[in-house]
Image (spheres, rainbow over the protein chains, first blue to last red):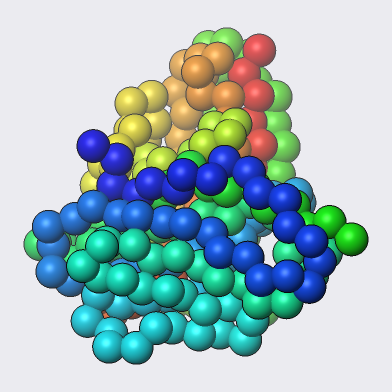
Length: 118
Length: 114
C-alpha cells in the first residue's frame, strides 16, 4: 500500500484564487512528520511547510497553510491568493519516527502539477 | 550559504560505465540521503547515512554504493551503469532532531545512460 497518496495529477487554477492540494498518508507510527515541497520547472526541491503528528494546531507559513485532519490521515496544502510563480510540482512527504527516530528518509507522493493561469 | 552542493549537474554515461556523484554539505548535518526521481514520479530513497562511517539501504539500493568518511561528504557510486538508472539524483541532509527537521536538497544531477 502506498504510504503517501496525492490524487490530483494536475490542477489548473486562476491567479489570485486559493488552491487546495490533497495528500493522504498511511502509517501506524504515532510519531511522524508531514512535509510539503515545491519543485519548479528548474528542478530544485524547496521546503514549504511542516506538520508534526503531535501538533495541536495547523501549520502556517505565509501564504501556505496545512489542513491537518489526523483521524482522516490527511494533510492538505492550502495556498492562498495564488500567484503565477506558484506554478510547479508539489510533493507531499512523510518522515516516520520508527526505531531510528526519524533517520530513515522521506517517503514521497507522486506529486501534483499545479498551473496558475492569468 | 552553499547548503547542499551536488556535482556534476548533468552527465551522460554509456552502458557499463561507472561514475561517482558527489555531494557535500556545509551545515554540519549528521543525516544525509540520496534519492532518485524518475519522470513523473516522486523521489525514492536509495541510501542514507546517520553519520560518518554509518550507511544504510533505502528503498531502491540495487546498483549503487555509498560511503561516508566525513560529515560533509556523501558520494554515490554507480557501478556498471544500466539504462534503468537514467534519472535525476538528489542529495539531501538534515539535522538529527526527530521527525521535525526538513531535509535540505541539492539542485540534483541529471543522469542519462545510453
